[in-house]
Length: 431
Image (cartoon, rainbow, N blue to C red):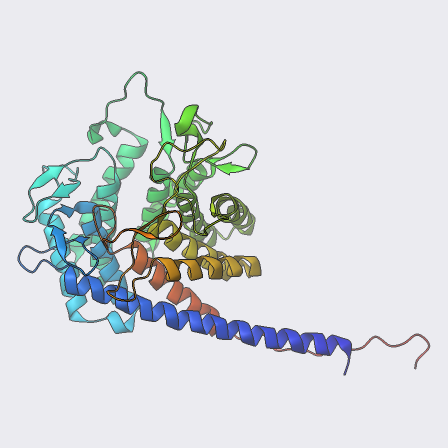
């Protein structure tokens, strides 16, 4: 047997072992997704008023009945997406809960219809408590309505989604005065990465399998991608969370702030943009700057896990929680590395997926009561035992698990390469 053939056969064995590992992770992720969804279905549904409780203790007990509009929208979106894309979740209980959540939003989320500004917090029965001068409640309202339309076929949901999307774009690109946030003389004209990120996500959401809307938002998607890319600063050596409106680094703590999880999330949003555009050169840039760079700087070498905040000049960050390990950056990292591997085939990205996934399942998962803890100390110990609150709801964890299950399934469905014999070069002088 030639040396070349032996090498290929060994490689074939390695590939089979890799497929077994991928299959094991697919099963592990699917089982965890079932447990997470069961937790929210059992504990979060408000049967009296509609919508969802998100302030849930470790065992699922409601400790506050306030309803956060962005978390209501996220849960409606999540339920509808699961209902549409997974046969085992295609059942009336899930869809009916999503519709009840959507109707709650339609009745109460907007502060003064026909105006579009949404509340941030509502009472259990829908009375406004607090408003944020940002676009994020409205963004998740849009996602919820679009997914409800896709799941039910009811056009009124899609009409609401498109109208709200147009309002959000107006606020971001034309006139932000409707957000109620006056520009103060001393405040820098900063652009946080979250704004173009969120808009790019909405472009993907509304344009999915919809040629008319995809065409309508093509220019917007390119604009969002360009705005995100300008957060790569310092000759490509740092992704900064905030930059000036013309893409320059800002002074002080605000300008030096880094959020590794946010950069990774922006990375997979950009990867999807690259897929739509068919741009492998941009894809390589995104992998380098938004996946590998923030991971290398953001991974804790002593205890594992991703830091929440960092300072680009290695000053101590001003956020008290900077060294904590939170659920959502690790969820985004799992998506980003698996998507990067799916698109590029780079084994480095697959190894990073395994590294992050092993840490995440080991540290955040609650094997006793289900769902994941959200807030760990730097050492990986549970700091808060709650499973939900004002910021953590039925979204990041199930979205991560659902997307990873789909990507792992797609990888396993690809035909395995067949080892091919390599001819042994003829010896000099042989016939």
